[in-house]
Each structure stands twice: as C-alpha cells, then as structure tokens.
Picture 1 (cartoon, rainbow, N blue to C red):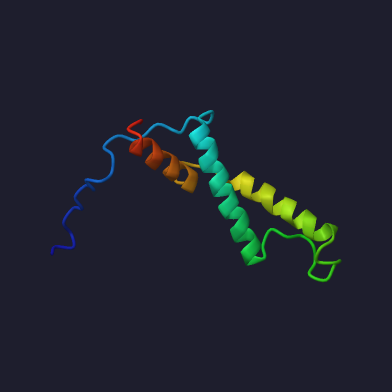
Picture 2 (picture 1 turned 180 degrees about the vertical axis):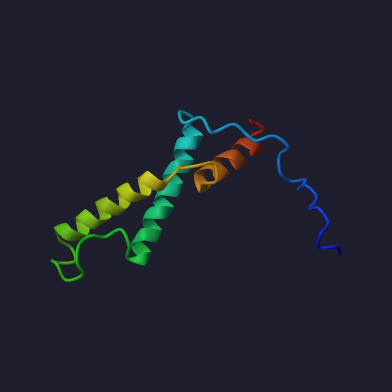
Length: 101
C-alpha cells in the first residue's frame, strides 16, 4: 500500500451535497426534539447544565426545578444546529428510507 496514493472517493457518500432540512417539516421537528432530549439527558447525567450549588437547597425544591428548566433550554439551543447534527443525520436517513430527497 502506497501511503502517498490519493484516497479514492467514498462510494457511499452522495456526489452532490444534500439540501438543508425543511424547518417546517414535521419529520425535521421530531428529529430536533429527539436530539434535544438526548442532549438534556447527557447534561443531566454529566452534572452539567446546572447553576444551583450542590448544597444550596433541597434536592426536590425550586433549585432542582430551575436546573431541569435550564438543561431543557440549553439542549433545545443546541439541537438541530448545523448539517452534521444528529437531527440532520436522522432526518436525512428517514427521508432517504422513504424515498424522498
């Protein structure tokens, strides 16, 4: 194998870039919701996305509720950003499976 040889194109990749998802499409909106939910769960599991100090109130009180709202909004802000997002990939795969590009 020659390490200086050019890399052949990937046959699985499309020859033309795909159009951006239609933001009004219900399939796109559901893909973004799924991505947002996954981000929210990851933020919660990692302990990030929380402003309340660990000892700053009861675990079931307003600080925990505030943290959950904060995580939800952080996740929604991240979901669906860019063509490489999970939502975009999921949307494209579902559109391809339905035969709709």
